[in-house]
Amino acid sequence: MKASRLPLLVTALVLLFLHAPLVVLVVNSFNASRFGGSWESFTFKWYEKLWEADEIWESMLITLQVATCATLAAVFLGTLAALALHRHRSWLKTTHQTLVTLPLALPDILMGMSLLAMFVALGVETGMLTLWIAHTTFCLSYVTMVVLARLQDFDFTLLDAARDLGASRWQAVRRVLLPLLLPGILAGGLLAFTLSIDDYVITFFVSGPGTTTLPLRVASMMKTSRSLPMINALSTLMIASTFLLATVSFRLQRRNRRA
Image (cartoon, rainbow, N blue to C red; front, side, top):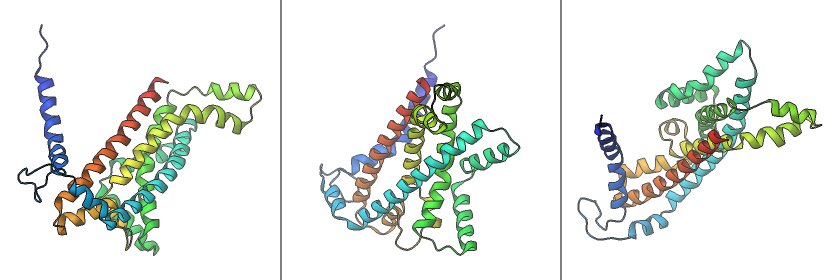
């Protein structure tokens, strides 16, 4: 019986529908036309104007600072959370696992409103600190899930063997556990970094004066800027960076599964 090509065709049409707007955006970033309604000529002038836009690069710096700090905190806490969930059996495990996975299920707008309400109740002024806490909160869940998946296939008798050969507990962790978990930790870290850079909804609620991240800047430019192709150029660079990080994360996860 000949296999049907209908599923392949439907999948191709869905992928085309999802990625066609991105292709149009990238093409228009090289279009000399100001409004992108028609093609005039190939140009790099929008990238040149983007290079001269200091406020955009200031927002980029803030975004990278928040993403880096949130990723480091999420990697540290997420790895510890994954180890606790995998190794320890207690009545707190179900509660712990629910709290860790809850941010994955909650809508971003609900998380943003909840975090803002908490900061207001605690009297914490919105700024870099609140951004860092908020981004760490949702990045933590992704790192925990990725590292926990790695731990499902980890042979903990290797740690016992290292201890039998004279290694201390810290040496066994540093020379056996961490190297074997490193692909999963890096994959979770890259995923967290990508999500932090792209986040808009939660950042909108918890950002303060002087902490405008790049997604917030882009949204503001979409409403007020007359140089829409410059936004296309910026979005093209963001797409390329996100695709690169996602590709590295995917390869690390594949290596993680093969190990």
